[in-house]
Length: 370
Image (cartoon, rainbow, N blue to C red):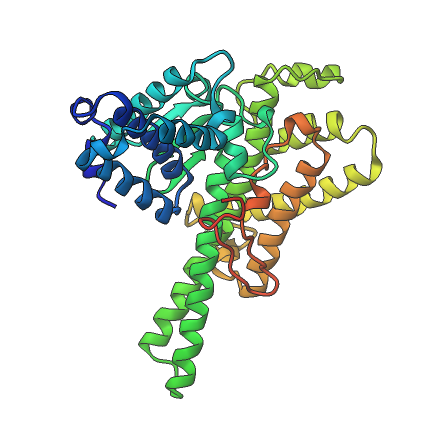
């Protein structure tokens, strides 16, 4: 899409070319265009609205019928009425959406990432209602005022939840890994010859991807656990356990502390089965994390006569599949016991997830709710 042209459609100079009913038609189309662009990958509807704006500018006299405008306005409001903040006039809403879009274009043109807080966006439109159009299972309390939202008019609107972003990286890395496995197999089948330089390079690529899949999976778990801690800290949730209340006064915590000093005492509620399951998964995850740290902080040190780097240099295909499943299972186990107002994986049902065991890719971009 030509974003320079689209930016011009929203400019004050362009709007001044119109008046009365054609201008009302035009502003409604711009409002619809904004929300369609924020959905991401809905190019057909975006192109349709762009062409409609062009037609109004070229042939304004064809858009002067009051009855046609009222009918069009009614149809538009059916689509966007639930996005208008309570007490806000429709005309004010339309003007503020256009102003917001100009702001997005302005920051984008300066090669800046556009990040706005939910609290700021809520002044223009009902963010919770909009996210329900994009993500299934989202609730208003999932979108806390302090959350930053990434606004990209080509990719759509995404809450910058660290667990969401790191999971997207994990999905992408897994897809690259499967592609590289196929490439190595194809090469081996095509060139039935002794191990050569190309074959060696492909296998080294696979080892590199396995190491970074391990790192990415651990990062996903850390991001999720820290997010849970931060959300509890920022929310008005009433904690039942005195020791947990004292723990939440901390500003910096470790993943182990989040599990043992928040999750288990506050949310397992003496449920022995939940406690055992989460403790088991965390123990397995912690072992993976210690190996990961040896690579993050790579050194020539040894321990008990063994190189610090050996565990990750030896990591094989089955091991990485097991690691990916452990990390995913731990996050899901914690999410399952959280009360509804603290659950943060509202986006989980919108993504096509990878199947590590059966070596199937996931898809982070094409979302089921869109």
